Image 1 (spheres, rainbow, N blue to C red):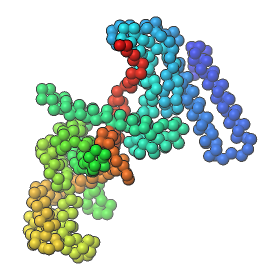
Image 2: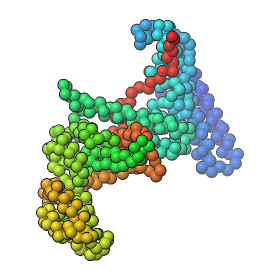
Image 3: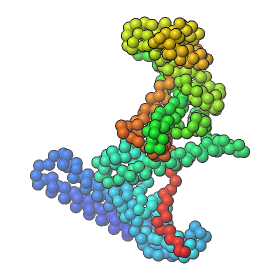
Image 4: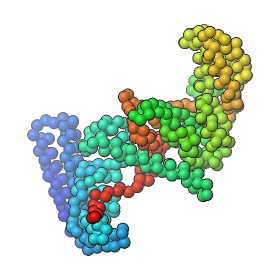
Length: 460
């Protein structure tokens, strides 16, 4: 352990001050706890409050140790001229430990009248702003819960008071950063002269799945507006606990792309994400979706090599709609009627299913449903070869992307009474997709340095 006498004078003074302060705190708490009986809850609350104040002082002292004892007389200015030292100027910064004040040298350029404090850039903060650590926590909390709830939880955990608007700003600013990065990646990839593609992963899976869906988000500008979500993932196959002779095929390592964009623009963004996952090098690509035309249009455009699979549950829903129209929902008669066409569909006998349903196209109760089902099965026949899919252990359900519409987007954007600005919803969705894709640290590391122009002065 380094002896205090080896430290510079400022550091020695700091160590002595903090040691004395900690001794005083221990004495104060000892007296407090022995004057009368205290509960553990009281001890926790009192200790946390005192340690929060101590932590703030400790952080502030450490930051001020970085201030040069003898500031330079001049430093270079971005305009090419020289800025001159003015004075020691205090900067207030909100941190995870509370608000701290850092007194650092301030310089002003007599040519362009631009002021700067070099220590701000060195330490990565803006005077009057929030620290990178607090900014990250606010964005993380704001991506998980309504901004008011997020700041309330943060206050209870850290005793730091931050406004909901600060949480909103941190979350949406991070989302805007992600959106800008993704938009640039799409532009770079579609550069006709010199495409720039994302780096490939170190390990390429043998099979990658791509799935797309949409969910409605309530917005001020456009009412209920569809946000599209794409998932890229792999799967694992394990024996079913209920039926050991069958395999449960489950999604894993999913990553997501979401936007309010039109199908063509969305498709490009999802392709970039899929490329990042190694889809150009994988041995096999599987695309799963329902019958929405926009989904299969994007699959043909961006993933032409994919095995196209209509989600099993959407496919069966047409048969169940007819059964319920004929015999009532949940009845034994409806279940009995549905079993033969469901078995045929499972066995890949789509033509037999269509032939069976032809007998109901003129039925007064089930005619419309039968005609819709026939059209659906006829148009998607090539995507319903379920025996072949099962033989290759290919997943046949789009549960990954459908559940993702709930846990990635809906859980944050579709809570009761929520109405969003379009850009705000988009930004929060971008943060959610990075969080749920396991790319949080990477995303935080990619943030640009904080910017502030409060010290910029210009004269007419």
